[in-house]
Amino acid sequence: MSEVELTALREKIRDITKRMIILLSERNRVSKAIGEVKRRMNLPVLDEGVEVSLEREVVRLCAELGVNERTGLKLLHTILEDSRRIQGYSEGGARVTPGAVAAKARRLAASGKAVIRLDIGEPDFRPPRGVISSCIGALRRGRTHYTDPRGIPELLSALKDYLYEEYGCSLDTSNMMITPGGRFAVFAAISAIMREGESALIIEPCWPAYREILEFAGCRTISVPTSIEDDWDPDLEKIKEAIRESTRAIIISYPSNPTGKIISRELFRGILEIASDRGLTVISDEVYNGYAYKDCPSVLEFNNENFILTSSFSKTWAMTGFRIGYAVSDGKTIERMLRVSSAALTCVPEFIQHAAIAALESRREAERNREIMKRRVDIAFTEISEDPHIKVYKPDGAMYLFPVSEKPGFDSNRFAEELLEKWHVAITPGTGFGDYPRAFRISLGQSEDQIIEGIRRIREALK
Image 1 (cartoon, rainbow, N blue to C red):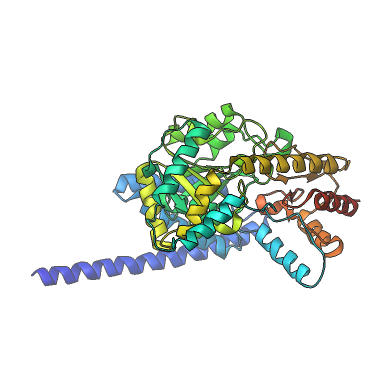
Image 2 (cartoon, rainbow, N blue to C red):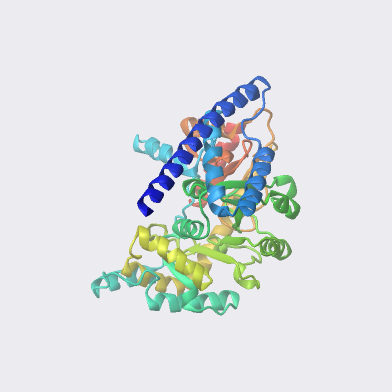
């Protein structure tokens, strides 16, 4: 009797599955028809209002019918992705990432051209001597073995002391993990707290990796744009309005890449309070805190429980090629992030972790790097500000300028391409950081002479 019952149930579920596919086929035909109507009416493919309304309906139905909300949102995400594809929507749009520009610049340099690299977010400083000697010493001592995925105890202890001295925050080593660079820390954070079909807010313009990682994870990106007219300050009301039923996180990063903006403590606190009220996690990418030229808040300074701090040794100590960063959060979240890390890799190389200990002790070199970068910011800001067609915010931190052209018909993608080909200067179009076709990013990872000459060429090209 049991086998007969089981067979009948399996036939029933097979029939339900087939009907679901038939319904999906019908939905796709309707979606295609909607796309054709949109094209006739000259309407955009993506309609955020319709999607938000549908998302709310799905969440309501899940609660009413006892369906897991995350499963419902994942299914909705898959269906909507299909609709966008059918209607010809491209998530990437006209984005030109820093990586794409860097590849073009390398090819041009390989052909024998002397290219001024104002595109890549990498300081030209050398790592502190102590970092190099510590790394070599660790290799000679045979520090070349597997370690705990969380990190070696010596580095975790040194990081704990460093963060206490910087922010007065008492942490346990269970609240930390060492990662292969800051990018992976962000990847592990998103992977640990989000599921396919869910969404996160990003405040644009911002580092394109946030969107790329979210897309890779099958999550939606909700953009909260800012403008130079508002000094790149985010609007708290717009943040509140942008939050959906599916939203799980707000990603922030100050000092900002690409604008150099540092928001006030009041605004920072306001974002944290919104997240707390809505039960969201704040992912605070603080990789540029070492290049802050005025008071810069850290998520560690606030009494906020639901956060993940990500950072790196790449900028402050010029250790980009070492690929080492870290994350700080509550113990359970770190454990989830460690599972992500363990699934992808074993650990950060042991000798590199010993080099990072030396970096944390290299305060003088870190301060010198900050002072040099600040001088470059001042020089570059003065040089680009002389152009009458340019508006630019003077950076509070980081290593970039994000000028906005006021010339009629200016297109940053076309300008960046022409600047590289004709003037041999590499910059990144503003479209790499959001919907900013009139802006472009200048990176200050080169010598003062190179920066001045590069900006001179930029101004000539703008005439």
